[in-house]
Length: 312
Image (tube, rainbow, N blue to C red):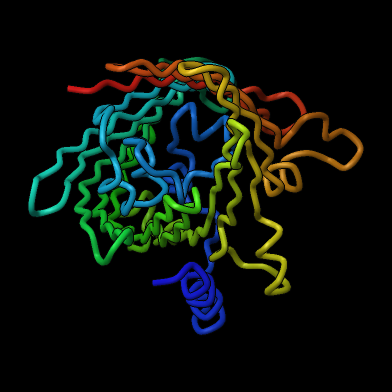
């Protein structure tokens, strides 16, 4: 399948069915990413050979040659913390499988009555479990499918959901270019928090990256959240990200990214600051890599992520 056919397929998919994601308690599924992905502003749908890319495109699982284990910790605002773990196992003749877990803990909240008296505390948590199968579909073309189970806990209330994600990635090593497309979190809520059924955060992404000839720079571009409801169809394409990964010698990488959707929606026009911008660095050695990513959300929220990748 040629890259142009993948792009045409995406546009036809958006035109032919009305897919959109309202605000949902399962929106945390969109925020599962590694330090490298965060530093690159989420431009990861076409990123090969990275175990953490399974959260963006299940097809990337078949492209992982080393660093089959990845774990990420994120320090959010206040006392909110989250993290994820992914592991990939490849079979010589029958494709690759992956298992991944993600969690978010929102800290402790005080119980208070109508008079403001504190009577203990409670917590809130999110969990995601996923299993993925990926294989080669054609020369340099790979596919992948993930089954996902999501769990939400808020005080004594719980909610669960089941979803499926799928994707394609096409590698063109002779042109130093990769193209990817994915449909993420298509599913349904199984049990509700209060009897009201919520929608799942359906997401369609398409992206490309290209390594420049004669310059150690990997350029990444992607559209994300293409299934979101908008007043105008072409407003969907304002949800784009652009990023660059610069190789400093053999082992060090510097990254810079920009997410236009984050900048548009999370800060007022008169105080945007660096909202939507991200950056980070990575150290890649033979048996492990360490990555740091920093992203600004709104005018003041800074999100720090740390990722460790290992080869077993």
